[in-house]
Image (cartoon, rainbow, N blue to C red; front, side, top):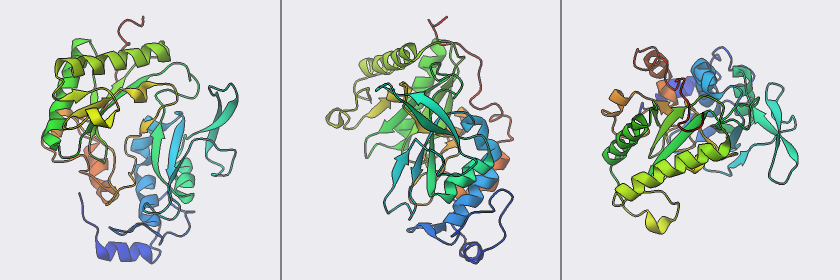
Length: 307
């Protein structure tokens, strides 16, 4: 992970010029990551510069925000509803909940919306697996490979490769993403047309099949007691209303790491799931132009059995 430059940090803390799109953020000097020193201004500048890469994955999807107004080590909370308090560029869509009432959920469609959320203390962006115009038709499947404490990252990479091959056996292309934490997300873009029940059932069946075949390596249940020394294949993010961290979102963790899309080949050479931080913006932008990352997360494919 790129280390913070004290000289650059000092300039930012003294109110250095904002990059395009980051203007309008107040209290830029507020330290959001106290153990490593990154500020609200650093966070705003990152999202302003990365917006063109992030928005194709974020735009139009209902989103939950992780807000930490006083910094990541103080009180943080998730917010999914908004009636206008977050800013004029934050959009809303009415979504009916289990209780029957429709509530105003958040979605974004611009860098200005990202900025408004950062202004209100947002660090992380977590997205639904559907778009606001087709809430009942998911179009993105996520498998979150969450390792038990102490497992080497090499084991997580091996698990991601195994899952990739299982998906290929069903005719599905997939894409890996570093979570910025401990694990890897395996992302499966899908054509719209199937419902949430089929979406969830497919993800659960695949995760449980891996767990049955290699019970010493995998588990498909959340129960902590059954996860010791194993990798939890979290398929539960594929239910209506569930979310997963968005590509290029910053994480509320030490060092301000970023959830970063990677290629399958590149993944093999990485040492951990927090390989990039907000101070790697130039590298993230440059590498996104590479052939192996062009079209990351894009594939026109149907969920098997849903046609």
